[in-house]
Structure formats: structure tokens, C-alpha cells
Length: 252
Image 1 (cartoon, rainbow, N blue to C red):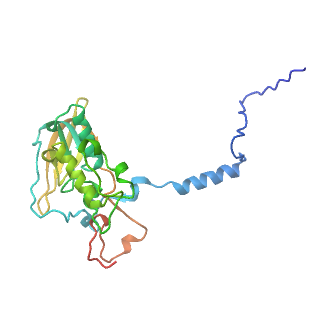
Image 2 (image 1 turned 30 degrees about the vertical axis):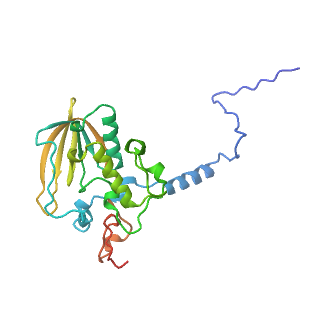
């Protein structure tokens, strides 16, 4: 039986994939692919604004859940040092701190910084009527075995989630390790440790700043607290508020 040899020069031609649909590798097909891809791409966090830099939208940062004059806890003083600086007091920051303590760190090794007045992240801010999580509680809520907590319903309400986050902070003694109404302005690595500046922003008071150093910095701030602009919003002159601080009496 004669042996047939096929030789290609200059390019390796892969064998056709017969397990899936066949498509033509034409330029028009590739152009269509690029067009559909571009539809699904967005500008990422550039879609969001920093309300603190906008006179028109900075009121989105107002915290309605604390009183004017609420004191700010300072676990680390100016020019102090901490092993781990955690930026954000939502699920990410709390879970990271809890895992650190499970691995042998002490609460005194950790500093949690967040602009809010308490733990919860997006669940601290969002409290509009009927707020619930669309993921089953036993999947969404972490550390259930460690805390011994049993969710009250299959899909937990926002208030239950917020209270559960507070209970995690209590279990791991993190309340005294949190500096709320504060924001990490800068965090720079200097070859041996992190140099960080933290702005204290008391409600109704004057902003001030401290500098600290840290061995490790964990960022868990997210983008959900920022306002997402839509086309034409700059031309809107009516009253506005962010959904995270929903005004129950607003006419919508």
C-alpha cells in the first residue's frame, strides 16, 4: 500500500476542529467578532466618579447612619506602625482579617480603615426598603461554621447581612481595631515597609491626616460606594441621591 506524505513549508497548519461548529476564518468574520467584543467592553472603573472631587455630587458621600460629632477610634497613632493595614470594612476586609487571626495573627496586629461609620461595606450603605440578597444565605454568608450562625431565611435581608457582619467583627475582636470615618489617601512601598497616609473625616468636623507604616497592606475597598454616571446626568438640575443612601420619602 502506497504511503502518502503531505509536506507544508513555512507554516504549521492545525488540524480542523471537528468537535464544534465550523466558522469561516474570513476577514469579515474577524471584523464582526471584534465589533461584538467592543460592545461588551467598557471603560471599567473609569465609568465611576469620585464624588469627593465633585461639588455637584460630593453629597453622595454623606453618611446618614451616624450623628454629627461621632468620635473616631484611633487604634494606631500618628507615626505609628502596624503589621497589617486592611483598607475596607466590608466582606472582603472582614474575611481577610478573620483568616489572618485563624492563621495566628492577633487583633492588635490589624488596622481596618473605612470611610463608613461601621462594618458592612455595601451592606452598611444600602438600606433601602425591601433590600435582600439574591444569592442563597448558606452560599453568600461566610464563616457560618465558625460563628455558629443560622440564617433566618433562604435569601437574607440587607439588615440581617449587616448585623451578621457586625457579629463577625465581634467574634474576632475587630471593633477596637477599626478606624471609621477615615480613608487611606496614599500607600507607598519603600523597599522594607508601606508608608501610608490616613485622612480622618469626622461628620460635621474638619479633616485631618496621620501617617503610619505597615508591613502589609490589603485592599478591599471595592467600587460599589462610588456613583456611576449616565449620559446627560450633568444636565439634570433636580434633586439627586445615591441608591446607597436611599431617601425613603423621596418622590420617585
